[in-house]
Length: 217
Image 1: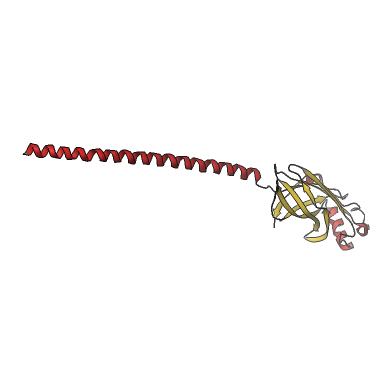
Image 2 (image 1 turned 90 degrees about the horizontal axis):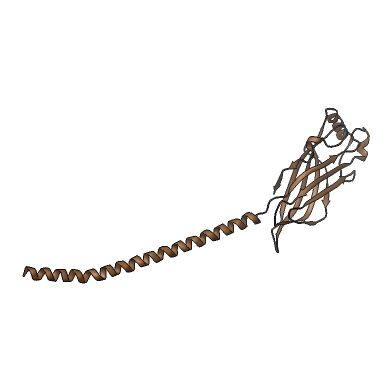
């Protein structure tokens, strides 16, 4: 009787074992396929992320670079020259982007002395700047655009006797970045440069080719 029960128990155990292992195999295969699919999906996400990161690096706009080439006030050594005062400005605007052009919608220059605006004037007509190119910005401020009286001219003369007269140039431009057929929104850009002239009214060597800080507002 005991032997019969033992045989029946082993038979039942064998019957339960076959479906059990079959289920284990199916579960194992399902888990393996799921892991493979997850791995493929994660690899695709990684590849797409790397591609977008590279595109973002290559197409991210870099702000223009401005450098002072020349700045002079002819007649600074003459006491009566304030009636015919002129300031000559020469800067370069560099587009450092590899694939992005820049539309300059407007560009206005202002000259400051001790935080007082001496005058402002448009510097350039609207233009498009190709990638990796440099544009020369040359302009002369004259009596029509400058506010210089005898008192201010005397301040120039006094500072001149000390070796240098320091001014600040502010260049404000409305720009848009362009990639192929896509154009960005308008940005208001400022380039601020301090510059000093010597006793003859010419730019001092230490200030030549100085890079101007650029920021957006």
